[in-house]
Image 1 (tube, rainbow, N blue to C red):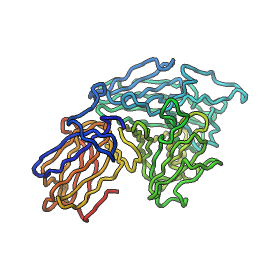
Image 2: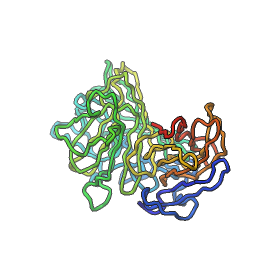
Image 3: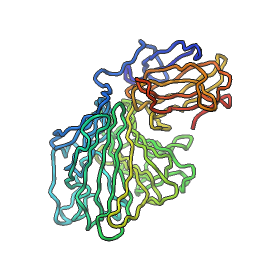
Image 4: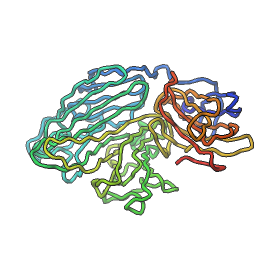
Length: 462
């Protein structure tokens, strides 16, 4: 772990007295070494309170860039509207193919000319794949590789927004795709909304299939890195005994549920294979385990709807050629009447955190679930997490109405540093839970990180 990457929160004094507090970078979560107090949030990476959107030249293509001082997004309309970059500071989370930099291709006119040009990045395809017939695009269609139009809807301020629209594909898929990208100030959160509209003259049935290619090699000298990992929650009520199934002929030890059977862990070994899962957790995370960065996608799932590929809400593809994996999120299958649209939204987040990622919320990713335990000195609260926005974590004891019963203690946090919580506080009469909330630097509430009940000697949030 890099020095300054992890912050340690150890407040052994009484919470009610409001004593103590500090930030201590450490070499690892198991070998914590105190350092100077104070935030080490890099000066070059500061939330600006404003999003800027502009046209740029990117790798030889005309592109649109959005940034807010924390994260950057770059989209290239000429490459099927792909998002080619999402990064926290200088750390990228999307794989891009250097062999394709600056290249563009004319639409093909014969089956012999069809060839998929794998640019990398993120895109959305129609599923099921066998019904679509791509990639590459079937003849007459340009949803994957065609040149899309674009518009800067909002060029700056608290929110920046761009919209990218595909050519109408009324003959092959019956679809026109609109990709809306919103970036919010003072957070790593980016909202990606895919809208499929039926532009044909007959009903059509499709699933919206978001595909993000993420790096499989984390160092220049390695073809693959087992510390490039993907995590998502397995469904305890899955239709399959293991909670996932293979969508490729080849099986692989890259795909292994964790020991408790609650999570899928994918460790990239450069093998070509694919799995699907009927996960109902509504999130999937990619982790660079060498540099300790996490990229989280959150989305809505439904237990009542039908999904493609035998009911898959999530799929993971691992490449056996280029060094990347694919995070694939699917919507339910929708039957659209002519001129009818349907949308699916992903919320993207980034933070500094090693794996495994065991849970996520709108404000944080959790590596070690927060626990409270009775000890001789009082109540000990422990856990490890990464936040999605800079600000402060407030810790207090609350009653059953959610009202604080103790003085609030705060810790300055930001997305570039994972947070280890290790705090002992005295019990307070009437308290039913310990609450952790993320607030902005100006004390505006962002969201609840965790609420740990005090109903047993040892309690743990799901």
